[in-house]
Image 1 (cartoon, rainbow, N blue to C red):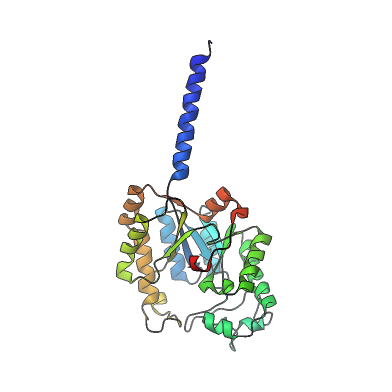
Image 2: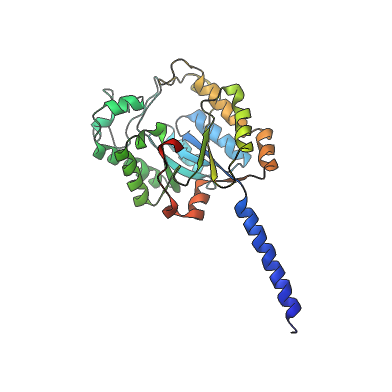
Length: 297
C-alpha cells in the first residue's frame, strides 16, 4: 500500500493525542470557591487582588449586600471568573446589616423587628418562616444577579441556611433546575475550608490540602477573602463574639495563603489543575448533579 506510511503516521499522531487527553483528564483537580463577594468593599478589593494573580477561581456573590454593584462591575470586567449566587438569608454582623432584595414588606417572615435578615441560623429556625416568602426572596436574588449582566453558573448558600431543612433544600434544587444552574457540592466534590484554622496556620493547612487531594474527585476548597483594613476591623460576627479578630485577620491570612509562592509551588509539584464551576458544569452537565449526604458539606 502506497499510503501505508502516511496511515501509520496518522495513527501515531492519534495515539499521542489520545494519551495526552487521557493524561489531562486524569490530572488532579482543585476548585477554589471564594464566598461573600460583594459583602463589603474590602472583600471586593481582596477578590480583585486574587484576580490579578491569574488564579482560576469561582466567586460566590451576595446580591443583597451594599457593595454588590461594585462586585458586579469587577466580575463583569473579568468574565473568566465563574460566578455563583451566594443565596443569603442571614445578616450576621453587628452594626452592619442587610435585608431582602424583594423588600421587607414582601417577605415579613424572613426579617427581624428592624427589617433585617436574622443574624444566625438558629434565629432563622426559631422564626415562623414562610416557604413561599423564601422562594420569593431567593428568586429575587437570582433575578437581580442575572439582570446585572453577570453570567451566573451556580448557586450556593450563605451559612448553609438556604438548605438547612429538606423543604428548603428542595426549593434550591427547584430554582437551580428552573434557571439551569449548578449547585455547589452537588458534583461529588471533596470539601475543605480554612475558616476554622488559626490565621498563622492557614497556609500550612492549604499546603496540606494540596498534598492530600483526591485524584478521582473534584477537590473543593472554600475561601473567605478579605484584608486587614479599618472597614473589616470594625466588623464583628455576632456568631463568634469571643473571636473579635476573626474577620480581618482570618480573611487576610486566607488571601495571603492563596497568593503565596508556596501554594503556587505546591500546585506545580503535584501537577494540580485549577478549575471553576463553569468548567465543571460544562464538563459533566447539570444532569450529573446529585444531592450530597449530610456529612459531605
